[in-house]
Length: 469
Image 1 (cartoon, rainbow, N blue to C red):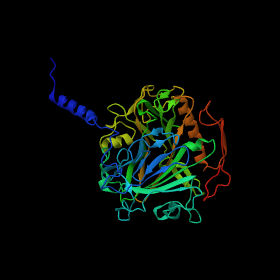
Image 2: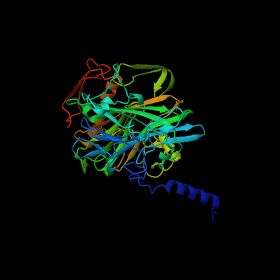
Image 3: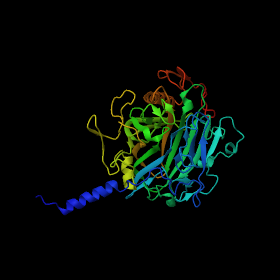
Image 4: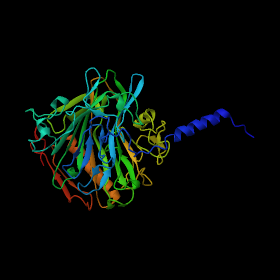
């Protein structure tokens, strides 16, 4: 009989405990740090972007798409239908700072607060009402937010010093992870990065256009600490529930920089037949040094301020991740969360594409519409991360990431994914040309939402007015 060695037994026990130690975590359990009106927390502010077909929540604690009153799903589409496609989303940042790995997490609880980090590295403003969310609708020059537009906080203005409105509805707010007491998320709980985020959201109303189903967000992420962020990853985490969240699937398109969620079957308990697909399109990722390359972008979008940076490139979506099983389940501490930000499992395991037997940082990168490539084989309740990195962000430097939330519905669940990809291509082209081009594009066959053609153009865009269609 072969002798069983005690050290091997102990090692196996450690592995099993590590793998299953966080299996009792309920991802959608409301935490004590949810800031939904609880006493003893910062005066977190919430407002809705609601000018087009999407009606969803944004909060100045890094949260988006979650209803702050009920704690339930907050991304309603179509507006007024009582149907929801997203439960919650949020910003994740992770980096090596000195000898430490530091993270800031927003998912079901939030490690950000309203305000900023001052010149001495101290967080300020979490209880100051001026660090609220400001929202202006195009043409409304009488609102309180219009007259008190927070220029001193970093909100954009035009050449006349008036609020620069980037769409038919524009929103701005400033927030930071600088408060140590806010770092209580299971996947975080580190010292602060001392990040300050200036977030501008905008959306459009356009007749018979897919732009009615899009919200764009620009995040200027500033290192307000005194040490560089090295190996820095920035990501949008999302828990999408397309109607009934128990029958969803996720995937990514590496060419489009798109992460998406769709109903695995063609019949959803809430949306019914031919349910929609929803995604995050990364229009601009982090920029890093790269000899021979040049980055060009408008800052802000729709302005005349063209930024040209020779020797840099946009790294776009560098990884996509989702949480499955044990090895790739939701992270339970900062070490595991930092692995997931690198496109790995929570203990550092790499994804392996079963079709190629090659390791990858882009699981489920096939095409559900055609059935080609690696796609999910069953529906469930999924969460995912869309990641850009790594970079080095020196003290005082800013990384700007821009993403769009986009939703589409066609003649079937899989055709909805195809529509989502088509509209993502159009939007990327618009963004790359600063919304100045004219495009006529055939819609997917038998599209249920839009007519046979989508036409939009931008004659005479000015810094103040943005573009008109």
